[in-house]
Length: 568
Image (cartoon, rainbow, N blue to C red; front, side, top):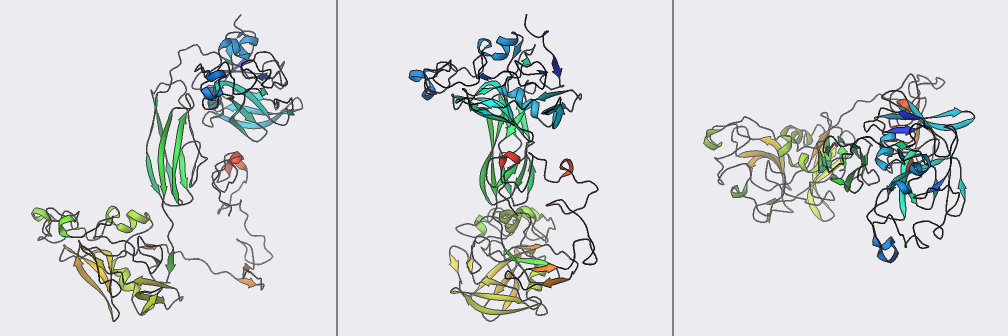
């Protein structure tokens, strides 16, 4: 007998067609724990060490079967076997050759939240994990059978069952599924551990293996808080086990099980996507999370927030980088000959931002008078929250209704300090000079590009000039290398609320009532932690940042979700 008819199987409607047994090997009903096996052994055991393990010569570095790394093999032995053969498969030997231990692809498919859900239920006084198909409503249960380690120590409260898949990087280990009443996830363990075995039926079709993974992006440039959806295309498209896993144990970004990337800290990292059919088959996406930049609110009517530094500078008094107008990278020299937005080095052959009939190549005009994001040095270098200031924003900055300005020195560097009359905040613009073949006029003059073209003379653009005695907004040649001081606009009107000063050492002022309340004695509005809107029902299923083991934000333990290190 092949064993299939003697046992009950559940069709969960999974894409691979895998049918799962209702119980473990050695169990008499679904909630029974059943027997325990070392990986690759077919006789039940409650404790195996390397001296008694079937496939080694006394240690994990003397393996005699299922070894892909010579450092783990006896006298350098390797055989390249990565899945249990039928004669070493506890499911096949104990139930029949129509049954087998699942491979890791089948395990990943079982817990894929696109196909199944997990919950805790009681069956005959035993609390178990219930895995229910989203496709057809059928389910299996996984009892908390625990496991035995090499010393015979029994671990209760959770459960595990082996896969038939070897860990290809560390041959003394194999993959399995591990769970308790809150989590269910893949993992690896030493082959001498004794775990449960939950059989699957052998698939009655040819397995089509994954040969390649193609990602929708191989480079992402993000700002903190940005979210992007990565997609993985599997080749061939008819692969039996097409599921992929995204590595989320990386810094600077979080990655959801579906490939949703969220940036939380500046830095550079690499996202790995690997095939559940072949964990050595991987695709990579490099991610750059750009540095956050400080800004100052001067209380200006427009809501403009001014950056504290120039692009390329680390402190307000530093000069930073220089840019031609409409270019987004600094250069060694600046001339019409190397200006990107013209042909042949002539100011009468402009290719973009042309509002007169004299300066476009062959009379071309596009009537675009403000830099578009792709040509804005602030946007390109700092992200889409930032832009080069317009002429109007420069005029507002120096409007004596709102600010005062004085020539001063900061850490030995000359420039102009602009101070708000509204809230007392200030910024400093260093006299950074300008660049042609070399730096000129630094320390005495400063030149800052706006995003605004000289509408009547398109080879020029508007630039702020600062001197010791005065400041002006003037038109200058677009090719010149000048400073850029970014701005952003995020004016938000907020209601005013009463607060009490309790004289605390920190200086904290406490509101007199709760959010949503009109007086101190009212209860006000309730919120889930880290949510900003109220709901009719509060439960894990509708929590903004995921469930018990699928937290997408504010998580410092990978067991509970994506570890982003954020604690406040």
